[in-house]
Each structure stands twice: as structure tokens, then as C-alpha cells.
Image (cartoon, rainbow, N blue to C red; front, side, top):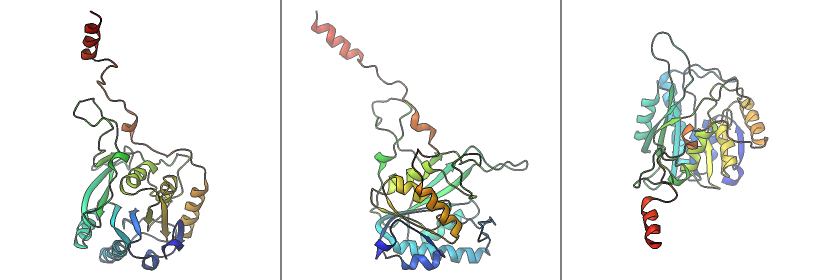
Length: 274
């Protein structure tokens, strides 16, 4: 029964926990798996032979495909060294490609030889051609007023600018790859509705489940590290005081907005009084 998993944070190996979740029960998978770059995650070090890493990737993706509803979506963060392979794997498995999102950030590792990295990739696939996408939930203000524009806002596109949760930020958790909340908010608003179930198989610092909680989604979070699960639980218990990041475009006011009374209306008024 899916009810026993709802709003639960589970300590365990993802390949042992995922098979227990019922098929076609989850609306959205949003996850930031290990990139196989040697990062130390406390209980594990993210370093496998690349063949082993590919097998591991196929195994957890296969389970996610089974768990997703027919109208479900999956977003996977991935580093540059494996993202192209990840894309091919997901296409081979039968996921339907929908977008390759670039998360651009202004701060990153500095390099003196070569270009400093300033982005991460997010692969967006769906399970079928019939999927949830709530454009009105993620529109951003138009830069300019034009009669042909939808003044409810524009599609945010596939290049997203959100700052890192900097190490000096009081909302920074003790986790090496914490993602900004507003970035995850956009994903959850676009590809799920209230009361839908969101799954994060690599819950880490708990950003996905925290945002799901705030947006009134149900969630399932899994992590092999009990310290990260404990961290995520504490995060869920805190009162919500706003997301720790934002797209700087969301506060802009469209330029060239028409005045309250345009020229034609002014002329009509003059005609009435002459």
C-alpha cells in the first residue's frame, strides 16, 4: 500500500527501498543523485567504476519508471561528465524527452586554467505523451509590454538562474550539494498538483521534500545516510519563512506598460464633451 510510504523519510539503500513502492503510484520524481565524482557523503564516498555506476543508474531509473504514473514526470540533476550518457540511458529505457534545463549560477569553483563551471544540467523526461505541465504556475513577468504577449507572464524557458545556497547562508545545511528551494519549487509547481506524491530517491539535505511540504504535495524521501534523513526531518519541522532563493526575474515589472487611459480613450472622452 502506498499509504505507508506517504510523507515518510526512509533510511536505506535506494535499490532495496524502491522495489517496495507500488507501481504507478507517484506523480513526480525529482532527484539529485550522486554524480560519481568522489564526493564524501559521510557514510558513502561517491566513487564507483563507471560501468558499475551506469548499472546502478539503470537500476534505480528502472524502478522509478515502474513507480511513475502514466502522466508522471522525472527530473534528474546530473554533472557534466555523465549527463550525456544519462540522457541516452533514459531514452533507451523508454522515457520521453521533454527538456534539457541549464541551471546557471553566479558563484562556483574558480579556475586559473580553463573556464570555471557555472552551471548544472537537469534532464526532464515524462513517462508518456500525456503528462502534467502547469505553465500558469511558473510564468514569469514579461520584460516588455506587447499586445501579442500573454501578460500573465512568460514561459521561464530552459535556462534558469538561481544562486547557490552559499555556505555563509544561515539556511545552509551540512550537505555538499544542497539545491536552492525556489529551483525545486518551479519543478514541483510545473509537474505536479496539490496532494500529488513526489519522490526523491536521494533526499540529501531535504530540499525536495521541504518544498513539497510547503506546496501541499505529499512526499517520499530516501537516503542511505541516516544523518541526512535526520537533517531532513529537522528541516521539515521548522516554520516556513520563505524560500532560500528566487529567480531575479520574478520581481520585475514589464516595461512600456500602457497608461491607465490610452490615447483612444482620451479622444473618446473629448468627443463626448464637445
